[in-house]
Amino acid sequence: MAHKHDPNEKIVFIGDSRVRKKDHSNVVPPDYTAFPGKSEAFIPNFLLKEWMVGVVVLVGFLTLVIAEPAPLGYPADPLNSAFIPMPDWYFLFLYQLLKYPYASGDYIVLGILGLSGLPFISLLLAPFLDTGKERRFYRRPIASSLMLVSLVAVAYLTWVSWNHYEHELEINGQIPEHIEREIKAREAIEKGLPRPVPGREKIAAMVAADDPAFTETMTKAQCIACHGAELEGANGPTLRGIGDVLSKEELVETITNGKANGNMPAFKDNLSTEEIDKIATWLSKQKAEAK
Picture 1 (cartoon, rainbow, N blue to C red):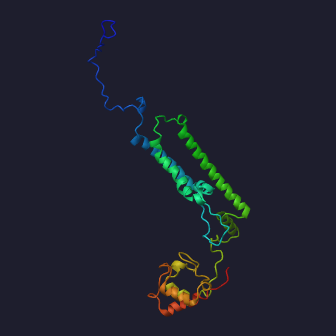
Picture 2 (picture 1 turned 180 degrees about the vertical axis):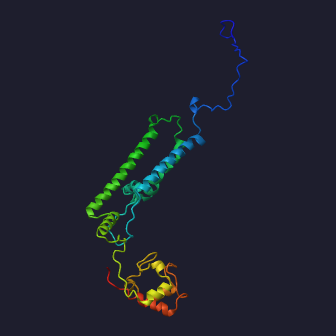
Picture 3 (picture 1 turned 135 degrees about the horizontal axis):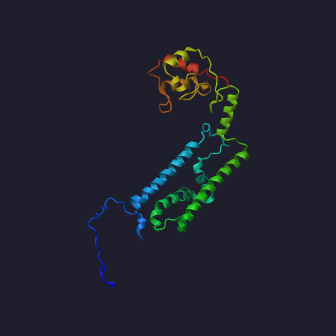
């Protein structure tokens, strides 16, 4: 309450005792933008938001990977010099980047460590280097430009890598293995045949399948657990045509003492010498022509 027009006069406000004082202890404090010159706390406010964005991006990325899985090709054939290796689609841009002269040859260290590691190091250092208070992308020209250039570079390198791959296939007259598998499977189904198993299209026929060495002795030794009920190969290699690969003496040695660091167990304690000889004799006869 003022009594005169003196600007320096102290103004006294008279309250009404009938109006209760409000309790502001449970009121949510204003956002940081209400305080000029202040910024949001990096930990935990800003970091939590970044993590939530990262989770959304990761879920979207995993959805794309699951929707478009990497195709499984045929078993590796080191003698196939026409095979063109290709990484998964999300690594195509790095694959293409490593083809350039400044990222290979004498500069291989730069290509592997520099061009691949610098972007990740930059992302880790970004919160500490870019400390400006402005958050709108059009007012952060440097950060926005680097992000835009990175996205364009990744998209361009991915496109160039895939285009070059298709060009190589066209020149060599090749069909990608997974597409070739689909074609063969579709043709087999149309003819009423079972789907072909890659790598086992030419499997030798079994010779003397009623021999006691197979029906009794090998059954007793549980050979079919690894080599299949028809020795076509299940959890282990096929034994059809094994006589063209190993002699009887080598078969006896393998059955007796095992092989491949225990992948093929030793049966010297489970089978007698006569039983091992019977199995080796029968296996050495497996020299039929391929189907």
